[in-house]
Image (cartoon, rainbow, N blue to C red):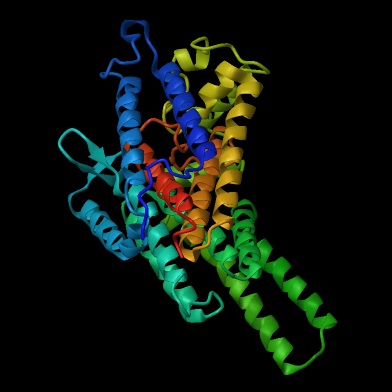
Length: 419
């Protein structure tokens, strides 16, 4: 006979506390980023920090609502959620609203909804549902293809919305697949592809192909002269050389002009401190000016005089660096590391494969957002416009991250019943 338990039964209060701290510190920094003396009250709903208070309050309500749901429903309706999310992404292409160059929003009468944020949750549920099914093994090619299709279809729809940043987040699922048995060689190959892509942008492609040819000749003299090895070597050379020759086409014809500029600035091919490199340069100035302990709350000159664009959203971390310095930055980064650590620990203690896979998905999605967003502010990653989880201004992102996290909090609380 089933016994009724309260909504706070067995929940991981450590995860909840870190969530609350990140949301609260984020609100303080949003307030600092857009503060002006004429609108000083944090409850001024005409300002971004006032609106963020509404998003936070509604997120807390969403979290409590999720804790009231039977966790078995998340598994039962995984593919239903996935299908509904794909329909929303298709609807965006038909009736979506363009904001900052991306047609990724739906106007709901005063509130703009970004379906791509919620698609991450749906994909995570669908991947967990599929991979946790009986007789599904990561070693099988059919499993790999099906899983990639589940992940790739929404990513393609988001790319069609010209929202490259959100589409890139779906690459986070590679870590989930690795945990479930995907060969580590694939991770190495992906890393080599990224390195080769960057090197090709920095060095003449014919020079690279020539070096590859010399390397192939050298390797040919070292291996046994049997037919199989020769065919493999020729095929590998043609594949890599073809990739190198295709990089220019992809860069010039697939990426948007502003994306090309940002990548060129990142790898040092261009120095454009008044154009594509302006945001990053101002962000680094703001963070560097904070030094060890920062300038203090509301005393950041870069923040106060709006030198850094998008400072309450994509570049929110530079507010931390300027006003709280190295110490404040380490505390915020430490909170995120603590969040990832607890998520991975919680994922590993699950008795249900579905809950474990979903937990790894939560950690991976949040990690990719964290690394890329902070990398953008430090000039270590191209500016692709994705928020810092629980920190950046925005209703859709905060709701989505809250739902993503608290579904797992609920699963974890009932891990002994989810078998």
